[in-house]
Amino acid sequence: MNTIITIVYLLGVPLLVMQLAKRWSWIEKISPMTVLYLVGLAVANLIPADNAVFNVDLSANTLFSNIAVPLAIPLMLMGCDMNNWQVGKAFKVFLSGLLSVLIVTIAGYFIFRNGYHDSKGFAQVCAVATGIYTGGIPNMGAIKQAVSMPDATYLYITSYDLIVTGLYLVFVIFFGKTVFRKLLPAQRGIENRKGKTETGKQDTADAEPNTKIKPFDREHRGLSFLAIGITLAIAAVSYVVSIWTSKDGEPNMTVLILLLTTLAIGASFLPPMKRQQHSFDLGLYCVYVFCLAIATACNIREMDIAGSLPILYYLGFIILGSLFLQILFAKMLKIDGDSVMVCSVALINSPPFVPLAAALLDNKDIVILGITIGLLGYMLGNYLGIGIFHLLMSIG
Image 1: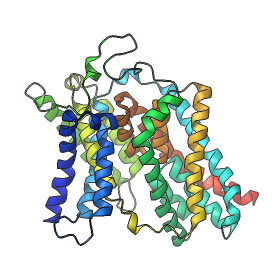
Image 2 (image 1 turned 180 degrees about the horizontal axis):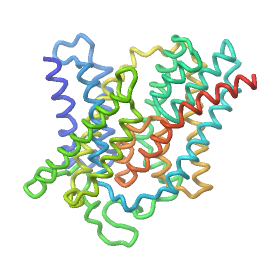
Image 3 (image 1 turned 90 degrees about the horizontal axis):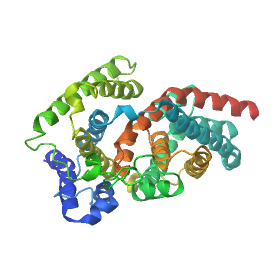
Image 4 (image 1 turned 30 degrees about the horizontal axis):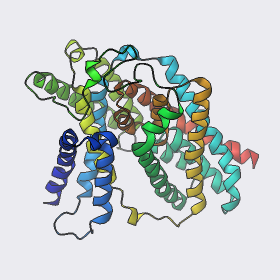
């Protein structure tokens, strides 16, 4: 029964919030994702574990959080205008973000190592942290084995990473759009996302808020089902190949994200998909489900916060310091705020959170940029993490 209730909760609450956003403008102003994040945190931390009415089925919750993003990425990409894609800009944004992380990671080693019990152990921490914040969790496990990190230290890092990246995600959801767009230039063509482009003409594609989706009305029902069918096929093929290329039986995340992105971009050029108006909105609903699921899984009571605090301070320093440097570099290079925000989310929180950032920004054309940055990070993360470990060990 708990499984059925959990599924209804995960699928129904986002729909309810989207419907309420049509009636209450304050939900649209603070973003439905903010509301869903708060609902998920309340369910995870305020409802007793032995509650007889509603007890979250964690396995079902994990399943939905895992499948929501592989479905969201193709749906959102098929709704993007690929003609606006700029390769040069992607590399400029990625390199500025990458350099910010590397500078702060190395600087933090010299700042925090004296508070740790041995320099080699902290060099291992730096190596794994580099892999996390230039790539993601897959890099974290690989680097842990490469530098022979003890299991206890690895557990501390994973726990603290959940805390600091969770807090950063809260910042992004509540304040990210306002902060990044205020500190940095606006992206061309989105100075006013409420329906006017920079030419001042009404843009019908952006005029309607994303919460007011009607993908299954009579006019668009056929194309919406076609988009869902293509997405399911893309996700299935990508998942099978990611398992096939993995050595441990778990999906290879780099292969999975790369295939999802490549096949979705290819599908976006199919004649029927060029006429699809609601593919992005369907993907947005998947993002809402994902947001609710990850918030519901965030039980603060179960986190080990007092284990090895220098690691916590160090990870927090990396996030804050790299964010400061990235904004500084962006000002120098005249990079827009939307690109910097999605780059930061892709590196700090990993590519699966890119659709969430794009939805927060109400900027669907930023999805391909964020996923590209995240994939580049996945590819380089192991090299950078292991390289920094040997560099720090040689310095002493």
